[in-house]
Structures are given as C-alpha cells and as structure tokens.
Image 1 (cartoon, helix red, strand yellow):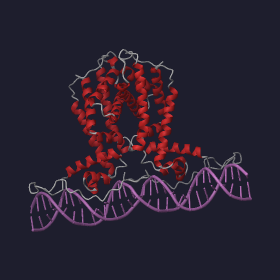
Image 2: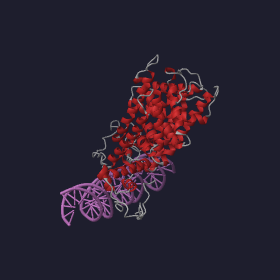
Image 3: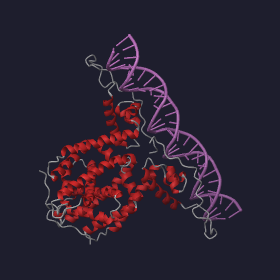
Image 4: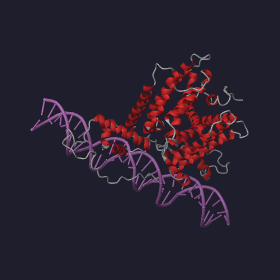
Length: 235
Length: 235
DNA sequence: ACGTATTCTTACTCGCCAGTAGGTAATGGA
DNA sequence: TCCATTACCTACTGGCGAGTAAGAATACGT
C-alpha cells in the first residue's frame, strides 16, 4: 500500500465528445459551457460514483472533477467543500430512494400489499443504482457525526414507518402489539433487507423479485401467530 | 470541517503512573521498559479503540501511539505499517468473537439450543466489546480489497454455518430444504443480527437476553411451517 | 565490568490533496 | 457594441500525517 496512488498520464483532452460534423446545424455547437443546474447534476453523479468506489476519504476532489468533466474550482463554486458535497450526495440519493419506495406504496392498499410493494421497490431501486446504495449504506454510516446523523435520520424514519405498518397489521388480532415492542422487529427487518442487499452484490444470479419474496415470507411468517399463520403470497 | 483536527496542548508527561513512594520495594519500580508481547497487546488495544472511534483513514498513527502510551516507531517495529496493523486488529477481534461464540455452542446439543446459545453469546460479546464490533462491522467492510476480503471470509463462514444449522433443523421435516435455498435466509439472519446490534447501540435500555430472544423467535417462527409452528422458548 | 541485544525516543522527510488566487473566455442584455 | 455576469481554467499553497534515520538508554548474559 504505502500511500502510492496511481499517477495520471499526461492525458490529452479527448478529441471531442461530439465530432465537428454538421457543426453549423446546432444553435451552440462548439461551446462546452453549460448552465449551472446541468453541471450540478453532472458533479453529483460523478461524486456518487467516486465516493462509492473509493470511500469518502480516499476519493480525491481531482478525481471527481475529472469524472464530472469539469475543473475542480467549479465544484467548490457550485457545491462547496468536500463534506458539503458529500452531504449533498447523501441527501439526493436518500430522497431518490424514498421517492422510489413512496411511489410504489399506495396508502389506500392493504397493509401487506403496501409492505410487499415497498420491499420490491427497494430491491429494484438498489439493483438499478448500486453506487447510490453504496454511498448511502456503506459510506455515510462510517464517516463521523455530520454524515452518520444525516443517514440515521432516514433510517429511523424507515424503522418507525415499518413498525407502524406492522403494528397496524396486528391491531385487529386478539393480542395487539405496542409500536414500542415492534421496533426491534422493524429494525431487524430493515437490517435483513440491508444484509440481503449486500449478499446480493456477490450473488447476482438471484432476482429482485425472488429476494423480495424471501424477505416478505420471513417477516410475514415471523408474525404468523398474530396474523394468519399461513404462507403469504403476492397477488 | 475544513480538515482542522484538534490541536494537542503542550501536554507535560503526566507526573507518573506509580508515584515514587516505596520505590525500593518493587523489583523493577522505575523502569517503563516492557517486553514486546505486552506492548503488542497494548498497541492492538489502542488501535482497536482509535480505529473504532475515527475510522481507518481518520485514525492517525500518532494518536494510536499516544493511546498505547508508546512512541510511533515502536508500532512500525512491532506490527508494521498502518494497513498491517489494521489487519492485525481485524484478525484478533474476529477470532475473539468466533471463539466466544464457539465456546457457547456445544456440538452435542440440539440444533435449536445451539442456535440460541450462539445468538446469546454473540449479543453478549458485542455488548462487552463495542469497539471490537465497530472495527469489525463498520470499518473492515468499508476499506478496499485488502480488508473487506479479510472480513467477508468470516462473514461467509457465519452464513454458511447458520445455513447448515437451519438445513439440519429441517432435514426431518416432510419437505426438506436444500442448503443452497437456505443461504438467503441465513444471510438475512446475519444481517438482522447486525442491524439489531446497531439499533441496540442507540437503545441500551434493552438487554442482550431480550434481543437474542426476539431474533430467535423471528427465525424460528420464520421456519415454523417446516418445523413446529409454535413459539420457541429458551430452556 | 563489558559487550550485545532489546526497548524506546526525538526529530525529521516527503508526497498527497483540500482548498484558493487570479485570471480568461463566452453569453446575453442594453 | 459594450459591459456585466456567468462559466470556466491553470497553477499554486499549506499542512497533515505516514513512514524513517539515527541514536539513547536499559536489561541481561558472561
């Protein structure tokens, strides 16, 4: 190891993204200047990739700027220092994930169906956004207080949400359960999901649907005596 | 943040660990020289604490040496460079955890009892060794290939072990399960344990026994239709 | 007493990387 | 056409922290 990072070759600027053919057709053909909002998206995309690959401290701002196709001072101008950039990544990716799940879960559905759709949306989102997941799950937790708190907030929200789902699911049973009693189970479920996610990264032959189904069965049967006692099936 | 680590005050060497009273009583009263094996233990103890608190990259060798009460070159002389030191930490803490669980699980016992005792040992060990757990679970996974592989090996072993336990538990049932089919469940169980561990760090009012019991119930009932279908109780 | 191996220290070097200074060049409105 | 604004760059600095050189002091066998 001995802290020797790969040296970059001289790196001639690559010939061009769009070859200069039909150059008089476009309104702005040879200009690389792009509006701030576009650059911010590009920077965040690159930052998520690089943070996911190397981790927060290993990730060099130079590498992020290179991956984003822009120079370093622009990052500082648009998104601030490294920690602010990282928080911006966490916020964007967390809200994307929440949004993906939120779109799948319809309040008007039955509790079990909500749970099933939420799980499936979770597995499918992560399978399509591995870098995002890595930043959220693997990086944000590790770095000190500014970042871990940012994520713990989301995590607690997820646990509380699931606990309330499970509590409502058992409300009609003969022996209703307090939300407080339910939280360890909800935490276990969230953790089981995270763990299956990690396991999945090394066993990509399984499908999102299959994994969602396994986890759903585990939860559903775990509370089987309070609910129905039969194997749950997706509709 | 702006990478400004806390500045150490001038810090006079504290007067003395053992005051110079009765100095002619001890065989080696005023000498601070200690044999290599003792220093290695001290260094590993300090390193685990510091790695757990700050993470691998944030942890400065100077801080570890200070925490160990020894100067930095001794660490390099005894345990090598930073990455080698970290690997040494992972190896020691992993084998300690394995050993603690291994002592609790007696091969001659019934499968369910083995699982129960293993879970309890796990929760109890971690509750007594939080820094160790943090290094293992939170740090080792994050750092690049040298370290994550070291831990993934242990983790896979745990998943395989649990899968085989569960498989044997269902072997006599009407519809036996292949170990291969069992692995996602085992991974989910390991992840559930890890997650409850993390959750526990923020909710210390719960007991190791209570959490073990909850998780045991979750697993047991999860396979209830293959086994007995009733709530499992510790003896 | 005397050499030898071991423990232990202070005081450095040197590369990496976050963050910045001080510009240039395109754009778009008046 | 001019000017203000926005987009963008190259080339630096400052310091943090891993790793080391060179030697000092203690134990221990003979």
